[in-house]
Every structure is written in structure tokens, then in C-alpha cells.
Image (tube, rainbow, N blue to C red):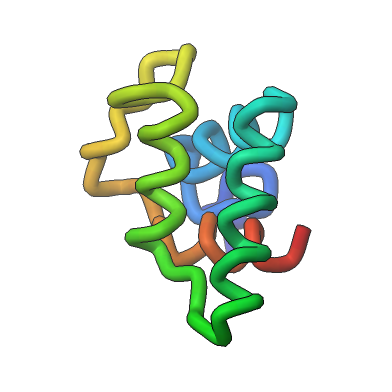
Length: 85
């Protein structure tokens, strides 16, 4: 069976978004702070929250040209990764 993932992520778009969020220090600090706030308030950090963080960090898409409105992005996977980091 062929591996249909991209570097362990569901697809290139999802991988690329998280790559930028993890590799740019201001973006990383932003989402770490937001995740901590959610946890402090006993709230779940969701895909909607993850997308908001990405938009705050980069506007409408990644510097590589992946638009945050791309329907292939799996925001729930990104939120889960942000919660784990």
C-alpha cells in the first residue's frame, strides 16, 4: 500500500502551514501563548483557533503561497500538533 501522507502529515498544504508555524519564532510564540491560555481556561484549542493563529502570524497564507482558505488544510491536525508542542 502506498503512503499517501506528506512527511507524516495528511498532505502538503497541512505540512506547509505547520512548518511555518514551527519554524518562525514569532509564530511559534504566538500559538504557544494561545494554547496555554486555552488550557488555563479549561477550553479546547481547536482547528478554528489554529487557523486564527496562522492568520495572525502570516495574514492569508504561508510565505510559500499556501492560502489558509485552501480546503485541503486539515486544521484539526494542526491544532493537535500545536497542543502537543
